[in-house]
Length: 372
Image 1: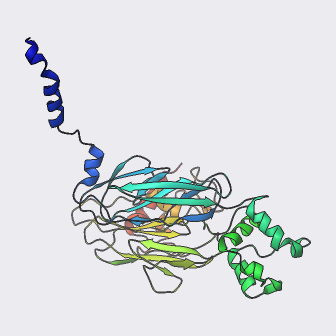
Image 2: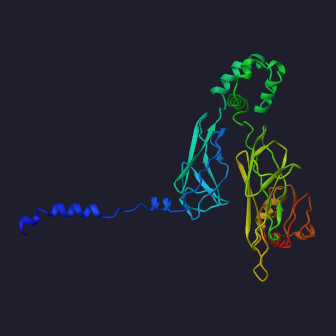
Image 3: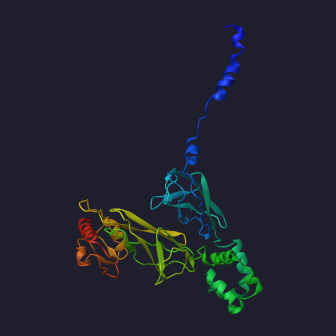
């Protein structure tokens, strides 16, 4: 090759590299697509959680997008709607609800953080453990403010709410300026020390019975659940419907609930056949869903009934079921005709259980006959 032309080769290569199109990052293009950037969202952080426990966030509702958006998580897992929790990236759509979950630190007064990203918009959910056992701030505060009076007798007050009431009313001389200056977190650490880490703000798990064959565009109300396992008022919120405490009016506004109160949820069923409508109720970080499924269109296949799930939700708390469930104390339901207990579809019977549809009653009978 002529040396005169060889001299131009580096210049030609440089010009070629300058005009090469950039190799796009699929993730960036996906997140920057028109309609794929959601509105900002936020989680409610939790404090005083039990070390090593599984902590689930409040649900947030995706809004502001018109196409699917990428969803990913670091430091935990997430769940879309009623789906399983996962750490794998996926796609989320407008109107869906999302929760995140992680395992709290095994240490006292330690914070764990989970970061959720949807369409390039991120938010974090943190949980902070309380003080458990001997040592820590809880013990220090107890020895400073309580031990002089209670060294010879037990402390009966072991909830944040009861401590605050005693301070406010000067019960037993507790209305001192020093005690009045304690923050809620400091009271929680004293309670945590006295109770071994359980501050009484995480309720027992609860479930709703999900009806099928529901009429289109109908108001559907769940069974009542009774709040248990807490010793202080805890937050309550709902997505995809409304809730009622006791005999109160249904509302969508977040509030608080106390131990022993009953709660129901309510929503309007879908306007389409064979379609689910889901309401998620969260109490003190513990969630459950209530799902109604509309009736199948004329000529279509009958809806599928999960008889095993019905048994678990309605009967397993008391009854036995052959060798499949021997833990109950009430009579064995093996080979029982469920219509003997639920003779009329749509009517609540047997200790407030139900109502059940004809399809659910038939499915339970078949299930009772087939278990070993």
